[in-house]
Amino acid sequence: MSEDVPTAASRTYEPDSDHAFPDERLNRVLEFVENDPEISVYLDAQNVNPVTRMRYNDHGTQHVAIVRNRALCLYDLLKRGNVAFNGARDQGLDEADESVIIALAATLHDIGHVVHREDHPYYSIPLAADVLDRVLPDFYDDIGDRVRLKGEVLHAILCHHTPETPLTTEAGVLRVADALDMERGRSRNPYDRGGRGINTVSSQAIRDVTLEAGESVPVLVEIEMTNAAGVFQVDSLLKAKLDDSGLEEFVRIVALNSADNDRIVERLEL
Image 1 (cartoon, rainbow, N blue to C red):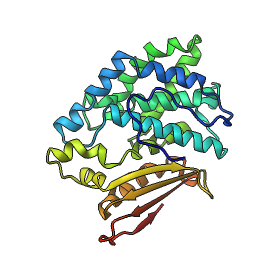
Image 2 (cartoon, one colour):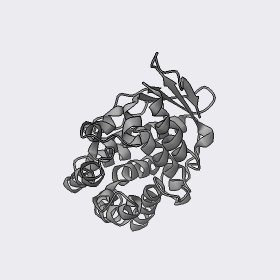
Image 3 (cartoon, rainbow, N blue to C red):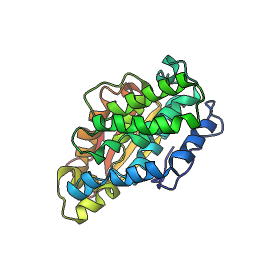
């Protein structure tokens, strides 16, 4: 499954019609959160510290849209590959709640940047909890379901960028998807303003990222680099997120350098 870079205006996720898992609940949640004024302000405000003040890569509305889309693509491909998801299941929630957990966690995972870039997942927890307390009653009448789903969303948020190991497949999906937003557009703002750190320069070297069903594993991630600097995004950032995500055996990563005059690294496989 290849994909275009999603925009913040994307409103619904539509898996292939032959998939067994239900998506009506997911699409209702997506429509709500993408039109919610408070969430919209948070997604804009959370970009100030990393981008405006620290000249770091994008962590705002566009980043969230891409991470959420790729997380749901990962979920789709893993489900097609018969990979078991345990977050919703362990809590006695519905199968439909698996994708809801992933979508909500992807939407709110970087909200802690409004406090500081450093240790932002820990700041995200109380802020996201407040948002979830307001949002979830619109979709879940049972307080037990709300508490359990909220806990799973917060677990995924915590584990996306911390030493804590994801304990659910849903959390592993968010952890990997966060690193899959690596193309050059993410670093355009800090690069244009003079930022030349390794994160910015390496992101400038990534032209395209696609996700599709693999032959020997459920997910094949293909990455096109325009020069060898992109290796940092792949080997240091993406690999670090994939390690201990619980998805290592289900995801294959292939990065190719398309530059004719740069043969330092021609191909990298993880």
